[in-house]
Amino acid sequence: MRKKIVAGNWKMNTTPAEGVELAKGIVALKGEVCPSVSFIVAPPFTHLTEVMNVIKGSGIALAAQNCAAEAKGAYTGEVSARMIASIGAEYVILGHSERREYYGETSETLNKKMVQVFENGLSPIYCVGEKLEEREAGKHFDVVRAQIEEVIFKLTPEQFEKTVIAYEPVWAIGTGKTATADQAQEIHAFIRGVLAEKFGAKAENTAILYGGSAKPSNAAELFAKADVDGGLIGGASRVAADFIAIGKGF
Ligand code: PGA
Image (spheres, protein in one colour):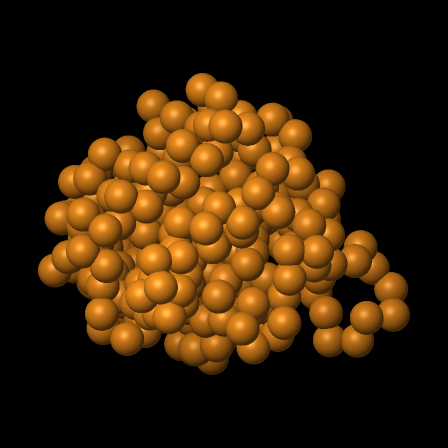
């Protein structure tokens, strides 16, 4: 049985006080959603601890949006996977297109971050997805395959079992433009097939989330698809009622 996951990526939004309010709102409404849906919230580093204190015992899990590629030491401004794990977080988002695009994250960097994530008992939410020009040129399958082969294929089967994948077409992120449910299903099924080439039947158990302008009004249609196991939500994750309403889409 695959996990059903709704994860909220708050990006660089909310102060600690605002983040605590948002988390309280999510905790208060969570009971309205079927218990088989797992919620994850990913606040900025500055308030991971405070948000953790709010969600503790609620069944909602904590994620960081990034982690350092090194274990510790003279890396000014970086936050290590060990620090993240010590707070009680369970997940780290890795390879988000904004990190790839604005901070030059390559597969090489991501391989190192993966090592840190697993050494500290965390699980990655690994993002893949093509840009608009890549889709228009019909290259989306090749782009996504490379993003998986260069990073996920380096994992051991045990590490792979703990990994969540998020397919996020760059052209749909924050644009209000969502992939159609059929487009999502097509590429999610492709991703599962690529994962199966390396990890065989284990790929059947991998949660593959859709991200990119997912919202309450389109969640049910997306989640109805066989290979869409949930969502990685940006904008709509910062309104508690919308985030929870997306969870009701299952
Ligand atoms: P969006 O962001 O829902 O605001 O499009 C999704 C993401 O980047 O994770």
